[in-house]
Amino acid sequence: MDSVKTGNFIKQLRNQQNLTQKQLADKLGCTDKAVSRWETGKGFPDVSYLLDLAEILNVGVNEILIGEKIGKENLEQINNAIIVNTMSDSNKKINKLKIAVFILLCVLLISAYYIPVAIMTPSDTMGVIFFHIIGSFVISFFTGFVNLKIKWLFPIFCFVCYFPMMFIFESMDLVYYALFFIALGYVTQLIATGVQWLFSVLKSKIKKK
Image 1 (tube, one colour):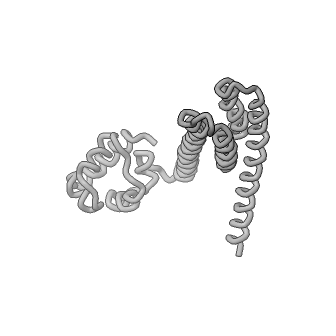
Image 2 (tube, helix red, strand yellow):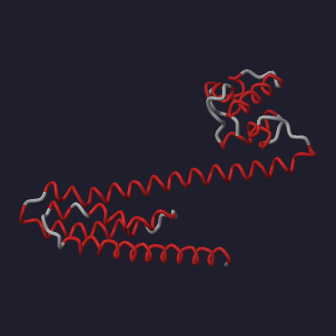
Image 3 (cartoon, rainbow, N blue to C red):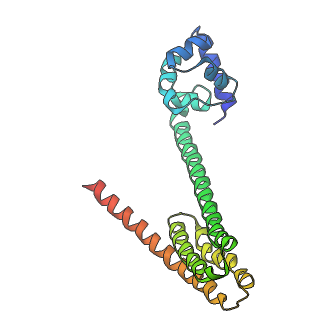
């Protein structure tokens, strides 16, 4: 969807209706600044305004979305294209959100590993390692709910992030903990994926009733 094209279309239709930006805004229950942003292509009408806007301007919602009148011969084709584009935009936004959540979990893992090390005393070593185990378990579990293929690389990320601990604690025995985090990560992710699948099955069965 082209916000500039839609904006010019809204302006053209508003002028045809002999409405000022303020009058159109009053009919919609928004501000004239919002209408001005739409018409200059700096913004796009919120979904909540589209039906009323289409009714006031005597056009279809899809015509506002594409910024032009739709002929009857092209109606079905354009409507299908709008649906596909809308779904594509929605999927892109969802994927961006998933990636942001995944990155946040990666940052939380690094924090769970290194913040306790930064504030510990020599007598806290075993407590810090225990915290590392719990942190790795919990965060790996949550990554299992993120529907991204890269989530299966997270246990390896756990290993890579934990590897420097061997030099911080001056103990190569910690390599076993690092390897344990890989196994733990995949197990917890599989559990989370299974839980997610179970919820989806139950949800579908409830809808059928």
